[in-house]
Amino acid sequence: MCGIAGIFDTTKCDNKRLVKRMLRTMKHRGPDGWAYKHNDFVSLGLVRLSMNSIKTPTHVHANTKNDIFCVFNGEIYNHLDLRKKLELNTVSGKKYNDADIIIPMYEKYGKDFVKYLDGMFSIAIMDKDRLLLFSDKFGIKPIYYSILSNGNFVFSSELKAILSITKKHRISAKGLSSFLQYRFVAHPLTIFEDIFKFGPCQILEITAKGVKKYNYKIICSPAKTLSKWGKSIANYDSSEVKIGAFLSGGLDSSILCSLFGDKKHVFTIKYDINRVINETDFAASVAHKNNLIHHIVNANKQIIKNNFDKTILALEEPLYSTVALSTYLLAKSAKKYVKGIISGDGADEMFIGYNYIRTAMNNVGSELQTYKQQISWLPRDTQKRLFNRKPKNLNLIKTSDNPLQTIADFERKYRLPDYHLFRLDKMTMANSVEGRVPYLSQEIINYLSGHSLRKIYTNPPKQQLAKTFSNILPANILNRKKQPFTAPWVDWIDGYLHKDIMRTFNNKSLCDLFDVSQPELLNLINKPLKQYSDYTAIWGLYVLLKWAKIYKKYIVF
Image 1 (cartoon, rainbow, N blue to C red):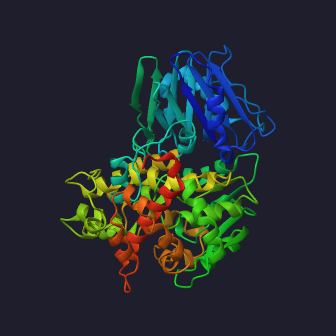
Image 2 (spheres, rainbow, N blue to C red):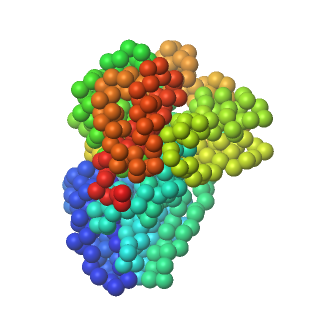
Image 3 (cartoon, rainbow, N blue to C red):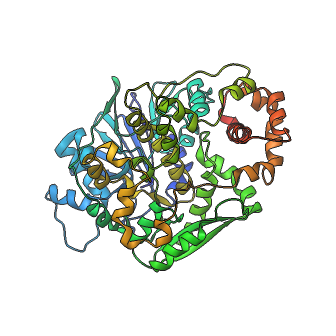
């Protein structure tokens, strides 16, 4: 199940018409079927991307008494172990649907059942007169929610679904500030004032009395090695459909593809602009060593122009990402061969792998200030010049005596779910492909809990991974310096996308919506000799204004 939606209505009205409208906006998330259930206060629906029990008709799961119902988006990788825990009849070799264990686990453990799940998920449980919503440990699978003008509570897997049944919305000043400061809109905010989204480890309980929020704690069993995690990669290929992988040629994806098994489809992006590092040779060495079916996804001028707007539409909120389009193109190509993809997202957050963190930590005494500058795309002086009014400040990074811990916490709590996983989910599901992230598993949690943060933070980065799996990796991968997944976005600004950027910046109503000074913005794009900071400002404001243009029918101008 890959798209869920529902309404809690205190009048006990059957909202099938509205839920069906929401589901239609998410058909790409679940093209294989849909189902609906109404019971007292709650109307639930789902659209399904069949990964397991593919011949079973799409349905809302229920308990034997038919008074508890469940819809679910994602995958639970330890569902067979949980079947044994529940003492459910399990026949060796038989395929089981992971969703089957959700209600039995809930009936046995109550809200705490979610602690035992190893996977990625958003879950909605209708239990008589209450609705319960659960997010996974890392916020891999999204849940949006809002309270409507009539007092009803509505939720869905996508923002567009809620927009489809509501009136126009005002831009959230805090949501905009988050985008300007951090490149993304941090949970619980969205870009709209009255719509919110889940973060990791969250529970919402909705009754006629109101909404209660909870956070659950992650349980772990400290592990000293990564051997169990290496063996667990097989769980990500346990579906009844073909699963492939994104292969960038970096350490993280190379390890996954080397552990994944032979004759799997893997996908690497290649740009037609030579100034960007060509990773296809690195990826090819991994593919050759592991007998993988290697697909090179070419990103040329026409492909970039034809798919940029589709990327912005699929993202649903402004996101300063120069590789969202690349991820979209990879998923679009993968759809021809597979129904699911594994990705290396999460490894850098778990193992503190990013170079910009090392830059910050090397600036002793000013680590957090340097870190904030490293993750920002809009310098303060540029922001003052481009905005007629000073945007609000959203301080998500607090002063600390332990800057490494503060940075790691921010990376895992905010940048991981609201930036990286956000991008992966939106870009894969827009193409009806499920993205899976093995570096965000229970086995990785167990390993990290068995080591101090200072031991995890190594130079060069991620030495635990490199050393553990050195025997299965080609030498050129082991000897390669850390490189970010990137795209030739500077060249796109000056070339492929320049005309559209000019059209967008010349739209005064879009500039006025965000209090952007149009004359200063046009001066910036027309500047003959641009610095790198000029390009980052152009890209970020192009994404913001382009998003507003595409979503204008939902916005109060």
